[in-house]
Length: 108
Length: 209
Image (cartoon, rainbow over all chains, first blue to last red; front, top):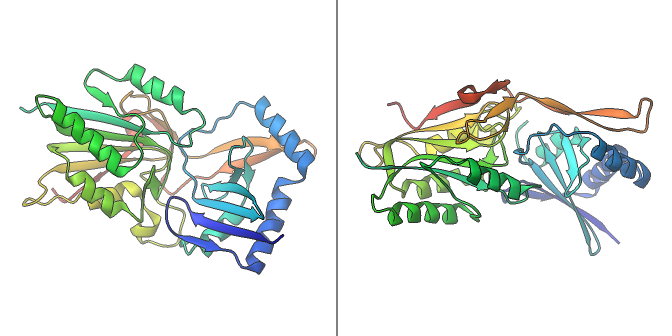
């Protein structure tokens, strides 16, 4: 099943569907940053053990939809370089967020 | 003197714990403030403020509007750099006091994005963009409005007097390494600082008055 990745400047109509090259870069980086199911599971447990210092009022910059057949996974990039899956407590440093903004023609 | 209306409007869609935020605001609201809960969008917010002004027999003018929401340098709630002009037009239809304030109570609303660009339309701050959209005009909109944006990652609200900012912060997450910890940096935006109280706010006037 073909995967489609769509990125949106959060809260605007500005959006791009990644081409094959961009999509390959993005998915590779996403896998590298998030690890496998086991590391994600441990990271989730870890996130419950640590008190979060994150203030509540941060709005994402970029919204990412990874569509694989009927399954859609949403990720959000905030403050240029922090990624989390919607609904998850775990954040990942994700410098590719800057590149996503560039692809959205948001000046860097 | 006409009576004055102070409004705080939490926009809590997609918040992890919006009920406690709304409950706290209602509990802490001074008697001269109104809390607008559960609005959907700009039109709904403007309608609700207009209703508050019309049902009060004194028909108070709007003195303070605090929008309490998720934010970044170029947007807050469903107000973003791309539709700030529409927000300005809609807000101008309200009855404002001669001198009034708008607080954009979210993270980094008074700062610009990290960017080589100098175009405010794409780097913010959103507080300045909104001030420009509410431009003072002695003939058509003779209201001196200051839009306040925050100078960092914000917690608390102006209404409660509990506002605090940090310029950046670090989280710790699990990593498959020794030690099994990695840091996630939430970076500083240009001009960000650690502050509390009124020092967290950067003012933007709506004209050269």
